[in-house]
Image (cartoon, rainbow, N blue to C red; front, side, top):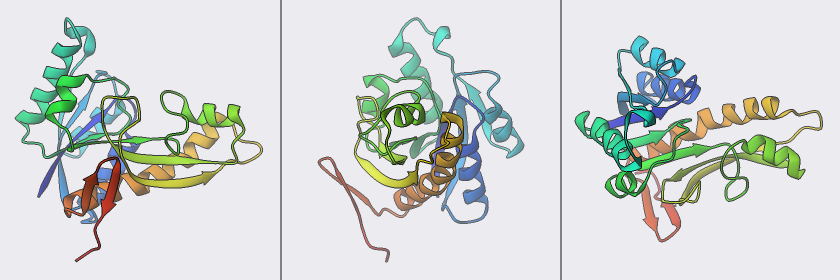
Length: 203
């Protein structure tokens, strides 16, 4: 069974969607470690309640980016991880981590990439005046939200939206496509050809 590390910084709603999917048999995988850069992240408590190892790796505890990368990579490797899932992890990782986990690290982002990468994507969408935004699951690479796209789901922008209200609706879409991307990876149905991710037919 596919072994997952989930990296989080906040409340862990995407983590909960993954845990629920694994528990219900919708995702043929097991979360074996949850890693956060914040000691008080609610996601760590979600992990503990689910009986999953909860680990804190803080950037300030390491002299440089490479030291932080190595600590993250070591925590994943120690748990025998097959796939690393960024689920609201707000720290940038460097080449050491990404090279080691290339093709085995995915991220969920609250916009239809390549539009509105980086922080505060729902606020960016509202400021730009788009009528439709959404979310994206992609393979990680060395850029900021630039990796090959696996899945996307559109979310309409409403006239009275605030960044918070829009983000809440986007999160509901994330809870659908992130578990589905993990399921596809676990089934061996994702094939990377240059920048394009091909999804093989089931069976």
